[in-house]
Length: 268
Image (cartoon, rainbow, N blue to C red; front, top):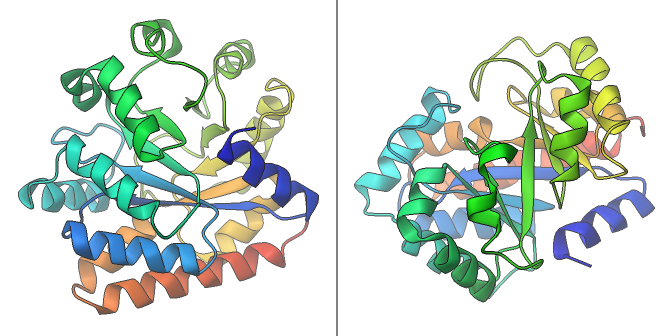
């Protein structure tokens, strides 16, 4: 059983939901980024999404765009990100999902990316702009020890949901709204209907909801309809507005608040 599957199994057994936290690797620098991640893991993070900085993101809002810019300016590359995974493994067993656009992986090399990701201790990968019809050239190079997380949009037809889910492992990432990360206007009723359709199509694979979730109250409201929630822009906003050593403490405090609110939410 993969590390991701084991985490969701334990959470389900305990009646809990997963807090999946996204941070851009190397923002604002590799040492500071590792310290922030260390505090997130200590504060109860269940799954880490480690974003590979990219110069031309299409799904990311301004906050995460700027975080990628800072990391790129600091010299962070795919090799740097993989090196960070190796360092994180020295202090944590929290599952790590590499969150990337396809271009950095293609430039690195599909076989090399798979080999090095497994070697350093990554558990999964999510490629934002790679639909199932185009992903064989990447995943044909892989074995079974790196989960491939697939995305489903709120506008995805039910038949296509089933097709996407059949090609996924680890969990399904359900985008909560049309738009980019960090957007406002979360409509829980609308996403509840989409989540129900997706759960009926994914053969028990965990469903995590992301985009537009920034407060403990919002995370708690989604717990009854999801197996986990994904938080990203809220963490990166702290790093942007609180540079220096204070960022790690504030991010850790938000992780703790999210987990506490989610623990008290109704079980779905």
